[in-house]
Length: 549
Image (cartoon, rainbow, N blue to C red; front, side, top):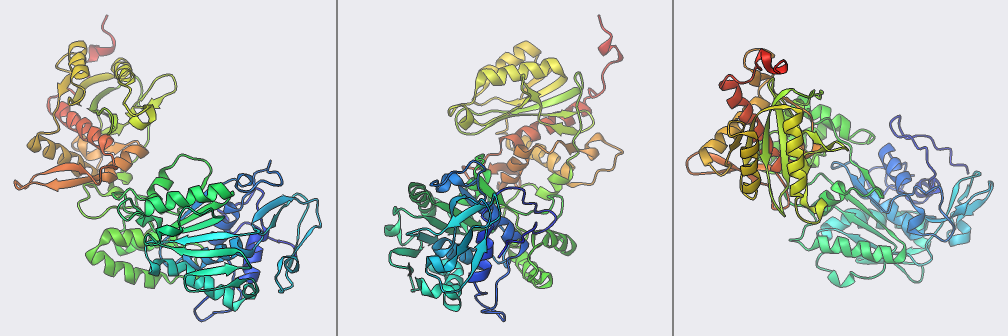
């Protein structure tokens, strides 16, 4: 039985070695668990096949005897909207980890066969390897944990797993139970929630962590997820996360995985362009067409009906569940789609007249410099020999912002561009701001305190208004605001919330202590400096600027 596989879709190109035997084994051993086609042969959707072959991708240099290190990815994260089939697919992956050929067993010379009969299965299925294919074998003693926030959530995977076992050939090897299932003589599949902490710490070969967008410190599931990873590492096993979009204010396990810079994590998160708005029916339709692509069973009219009803009371939840976007709840300061729509990348040449906005911190929050040209183009400047962005995360520098580096960057920007105004928030940086005033002049460097309620509200409103209104290309320069699409700034804008005051004004705040907004604040300061410079008639250079002796 040859694999006969090709790319699942035109955008899914498999040009790497992988255990192709696993998806074939799944389709031969895991019947459809429920619905009108219950018991019929399962056929993986394109996105499910793509995630499967990536999870079982083998390193070209893998050697016999290696367990987790033989695979390209130590763990996987799949972020998909509701009703795409994450639960049944996760159940099929659990079946494979329980009894299928998921352990690397060397490279085929060509012609070798995997026979289920050799591994206790009476189905008669076999698979022929081609030369150069990675081969697989089952775990000897598989120890698997399914984890979720509650028993009902665990059942989203455990129930279809039970059905697949009962309806197919795996019943010979797996005895299913209410809370755990026995695999042959010594293996187990366990269901775990935050209330079953006693099961944690055991060595495991695989963990399926469902809805990790809900795993936080508060419900103790962050500890559960991290403990399971350690348990899998000790056995040479691996972990898989599945989730809907998360609330970025909650600092969930899913968010930390998504933001990790580690190259050994496979991430699948289909998203529509950020410029598409979820607020309108037409916009939602376009977004749903993107994120539900590859899930042919989904009726987009039914999805729209559910989303439209949820939009009435909780639009952020609707966008997370059905739009597959990671958006926060109430109090958001800026519409992320509106901000994304203003992206128009261009080069800013040396000696261009600009303004700067600076927001600094010391050991917790970030430090950022944003710039804006005299025609309303805002960008994050680059500095140093390696063209690093002027945004500093103290965690990247041993827990403290590198003050000398920030000062060097500011000096470089002042020399590279014609900086007509710098608005700098002094707290934590009083000495540096005083030095900049002395060095560059009090007309150019202004101490701009963000703690002033009236002024900060007005500045935030100016930027929000110029972002959300349509660019006209005529009239005031502010009507044509654009930006460079800086990813960090976009995240900080998304993290920013409004805190209303009795006066009717608001201040900007973080969505949560873990969510940073410093680059957003620097953007507000830069745009305020731009508006003030235009109002003062300083936006246009004197003709003698380039020709003075």
